[in-house]
Image (cartoon, rainbow, N blue to C red; front, side):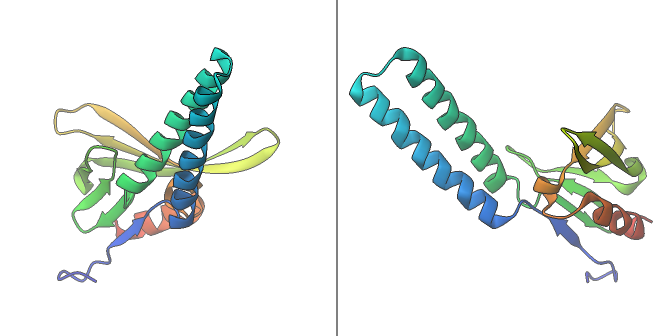
Length: 147
């Protein structure tokens, strides 16, 4: 609890998932290096290079954007790759859960409608991997803290 009696809650990607991403990045870099040393075909080297960069960027994002979502008395703070962005409660327009069915599997997404100080609308979307929690469990907690 903070000084004002408000609970501060935060959600981040699972630490184990981020560590696994870094391990995969190292493995992909090794694969890419082995292909370059062996003089493998250019298409294989390209795929290995793209895989290395893609997994590396995802791992960096999972490491850098912690916590991904933080809620306190002042509003929402969303962690990003370069910096965190704060959205005061008066600018948060709505919180809802979107249920989707993809590839025969049901999943939920947390959607938060916000406005910037300049009046622009923003839609923030979070999945289970970003929050390390079910969005259907996170939404009621957000609404409970919202003044």
